[in-house]
Image 1: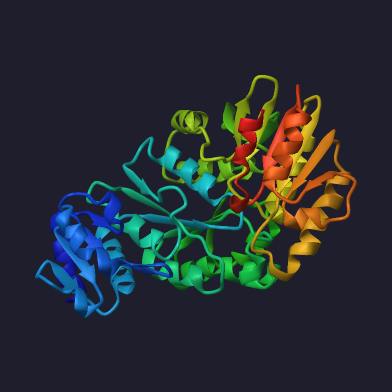
Image 2 (image 1 turned 135 degrees about the horizontal axis):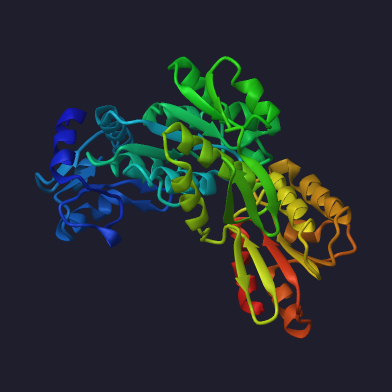
Length: 417
């Protein structure tokens, strides 16, 4: 079946699903495959559960006209998403970066949705499947699309850019993330800059942090919109406070590093003619969730939970910001950083060495990599060792930073206090 024909079905039904467990009525089900599953096996179940059609790529499963056979389901999904994006005729903003992508995307969406009907990436569904699904969630009512792009190897951002065809781009930063896949920090810079390469080739525009020399250097030959000069940092104790057009804005985000994320959202809002009053409302009403920079008050402690993910760059930024807080009894609980490959040992030791320079009262390090470091701080080979220790050595009246990679699931710490 040609994409144009499939698109006619999509327009008629307007919904796409890839999981039979959450299937919606009158949807198109795409039978995707993974290492441990084959969506073709569930195509008939999708129809039974209410899907109008199921897109499959194995002939053995074509048992009725409602099952549409294609060469490759994933490629068909991606082509359909790109075809749809090209029919929309709306501005699409794409963003990527090593740290802060999802928070920045949520802030941009919060600001722009004050004036426009927006559709943005849900959560962090930012890969070769998530980007197409985001595009296909846009409809005739969408006025601005916001697409987050993630990557852990070269050429991935290039591929996602071709699918999303963005008109505007923003890169939060270049940091030491996914070094195992990128090979080095230089590899990270080159891979993330694939978004710039696309925008440059298509004569599109970029939003740029003027305080980031690497971003300035990479965008010299692209039409750029830099952060609004009226945005001024005031404090982060713990929440970021700033002024914009002489209007004070108090966010619900902690850490100096979030100032750039907020500044990007303000600048993009201003570019799209969102008023200062509405921008203030949007920033102040945004509350982080999903273990991202959340402040949680327990019976005796204040926990800054930033445990969604971590890499050396974001870890150091969080530690530096935390060390500057005006608080008594500052404690950190850190978990291993993943996907660092051959750099893992050095990067974990570097974090330990960095902690020595900070004004902190106590540190706990959890995970196999931190356990191998040379340090005076308390180390635990795994979470359950730490849990047993805390049962007999409670922390009280402290401000506690909790940060680690997603696989460490350090949000479990909250229940211990």
